Length: 286
Ligand code: AMP
Ligand code: FE
Ligand code: FE
Ligand code: ZN
Image 1 (cartoon, helix red, strand yellow):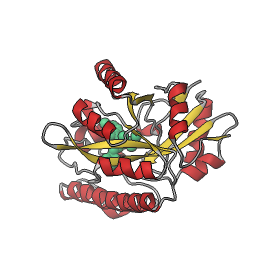
Image 2: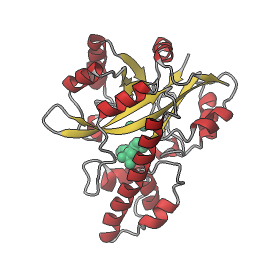
Image 3: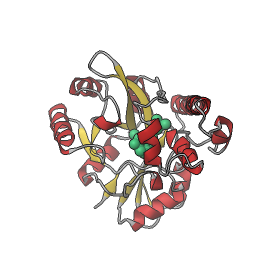
C-alpha cells in the first residue's frame, strides 16, 4: 500500500493538471493520493472526475499561516488540511481572501524585481494565473525562466525568491491556531507540513508544536524531502510524546521540483486514522 498525502496541481503551483496528477499517481503505483493545492479546493472536482480505477483520492489543501516561532518571533508555516467540507462558509471566505492576498503579494514581488531592471511584468504574470487558481512564487520563477533570467525554477529560488532573499514577502498573516480551528469546525483533519525544513527559512520549535497539539493539531508530516534524518527523528519522537499522527509525503509539484510522486509515503494505519477522524467529506475511490 503506497500513500502520498501532499501534492500540488495547476490549481496552485504544480505543473500537472488535477487529471494528469491522478493519472501520474496511478502510473507511479500509488494506492492513495491527497491533492493539497495551496489555499484552494479548485482542483478537487477535476481530480475526482479523472480518478483511475483503484486509486483513492484524499481531498485536501495546504494553507499558508503565520505562527510564533518559539524564539520570540514569527514565521510562515504550512498546514495540511484533509477531508474538510469545502462549502463551509468560513473556509470559502478564508480561501478567497488568501488567494486575493497572494495575487497582490506576487504583484508586489514582481514590481520590486521590475524596479531593479528584471524583464518582469506583474500584470501579464497574474493574467497567466487563472482566477480560481492560487498564485505563488513558482509562477514568477517560471516567468523568470521564460525571460531567460534563470535556467530553472530552483535557480530562481536560490538566487532571488527564497525566504531569505531580497525579494521575499510573506504570503499570509492568518494565525495557524485560527486555521486549525477553522478546519476542525469544517470536519477536517490538520497536519503540520514540513515543520523542521530548516533550509526553507525559519522554523518553529518543538514547544510551538506542543502548543498547536493543544489547540487541535492532529498530526505532523515527518517524512518530507526537505527533512534530513535528524529532523525526522526529532519530529517522530515529538509526535510520539504528544500523541500526534505522523505522515510522509512527496510535496510533488510536477516539473517545478525534482521530486517524484510517492518519493515519501504514509503508513496505511495513519490514513485510516485520518479518515476515521474526518467528518467533512470522505475519501473517494476510482
Ligand atoms: P509561496 O506559496 O508563493 O510562498 O511559494 C512557496 C512555494 O514555492 C512552495 O510551495 C514550493 O512550491 C516553491 N518553492 C519553495 N522553495 C523552493 C525552491 N527552493 N525551489 C523550488 N521551488 C520552491
Ligand atoms: Fe508550492
Ligand atoms: Fe508547503
Ligand atoms: Zn506543498
